[in-house]
Amino acid sequence: MEESTPDFSLIVSNNDQAAAQALARGDFVQAYLLVHALIEALLRLFLSIPDGKDISFNDLIHKYRAYLEEEHYPIPTFIDELTQFNQRRNRLVRQLWRKGFSFTNRQTEDAARMAVMMYGLFIEWLETFDPEITRMGFRYDDGD
Image (cartoon, rainbow, N blue to C red):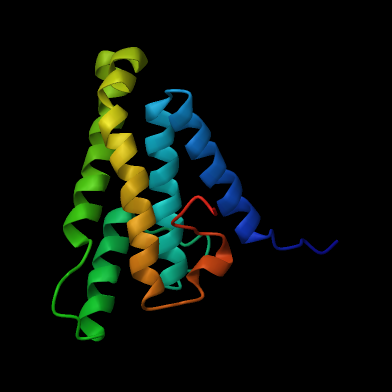
């Protein structure tokens, strides 16, 4: 039996909707982690990293930096933001075990809202290099 390839745009859309719903209901930890997963998928797609290849988020950032250098782009746009975003995700996971979900969730609201904003801006930025990036389901607006 042949295994079919899932429609990646449906998966992205589903995760995007789940992140928006989590944010709306005040589940900021889940929203942040879903946005982190979406940005990781976006980087993997943009950099043509094969699905299932074991590579860390930090390595993706390094590959993205190398891409910008290859393009002779003088400003390492989004490198610091992605690095801080990943560090915050790591701290968030540690806080879940140290301080519990309720405390961590309350402390994560601003970070989750900023993560959603950064995600949209990053999609828009990457689209300047690859106008087809949104065909895979990544969107930077509410579709209105």
